[in-house]
Length: 184
Image (cartoon, rainbow, N blue to C red; front, side, top):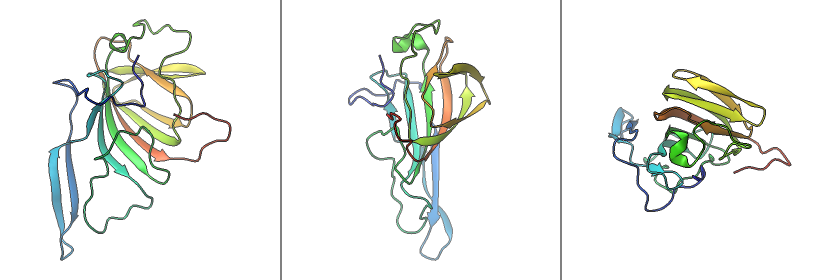
């Protein structure tokens, strides 16, 4: 079973999985706006040993407010971490394969959905392609292209019960941890 919190070293994203072009701006010495990067996002990880379960780490901000001065540093050029830093945020796009590829029952019927987790963050999630169930311990909702979920530190999982990948854009902003709650 895939572990949502881990990218297994040596397992690479499969050919044809979701990729995104990342363009980054900055300022030159005179203060003029310039483009400093234009490439396919280099920081892609296969999650839990499944080459079709992919995260594209688009941007990771380590502090709020952000400091846009100084030299450009790619803060996503690091090991995968599902949570944002304690004062930051993460922008990622993930591809979820059908449940069967993750060892889950394809009908979505399980006593407790696998990969349930809670992040110490306020999450914005938007389905870009496909469909996926947002599962919480109090129910589930089918999300389709264009649907948006505001995840407020609740325990949750994702279940793709279709036969096609689902692609979801996420922005995670650091949030306070609630005492007594378990976080992944």
